[in-house]
Length: 299
Image: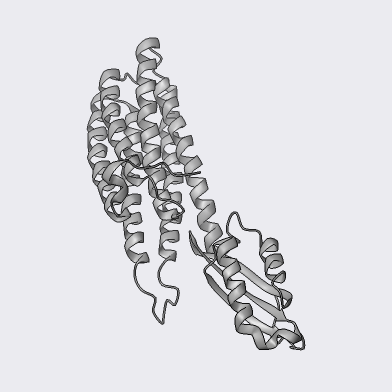
């Protein structure tokens, strides 16, 4: 999905600064919703405040992930610390699932004995949250393929939808008098949270398992390398993500006997093709002759 265009100066701000603004906004709205939820006796509003508390922790982790990923590579961490972003995204997804479970648990108890809710207080506080969360979504738009920033945006987007749901739910309670709408709304918020969480968890686990990145077919890459003039065969080919948007490739290519003197040119042609056709910059390719006897296991 293409990220929306962020208007004005928001688009030009560094990701870390925009994330910091989102953290401050989330903290302020969380406090307002805790007070408003207590005064209105609304579980939906308190659930949203609880969601925002975990989001505040999650956004803090995202900020830490961005900082850690910028640390340079070293002898101990030759690829650098890019995977910290993935670990943070994995932690955020797990936190979201836990929050959803707590919300559902609380909501089930209120379905049996729905308490009285101060509808107008509930809706007013949620309205403030909706506006503030909308600003945070704009701040975090344009995060592209960065899984860590996408995790932060999912948290804030979940808050925005929750605030909207609380407003609509308050209106329905006012019109119908059905107090059970409040806990049912809480469960709906939990479902929205879980949907976002599972997407983050799946992508995080795929990166950690070094699965072939989404949108890339290993067979297509192997075929394209094999079509380079002078290449007899391709084997032991692996493609994985170091972090989101940073794809790496390693493999072995067998060179025709008549082209062994042109291996440098062959490597450059393969690398250029991989960059242009598959957007893969980080490559490690071993060149072999047709008579080479492979030592070790071939994958």
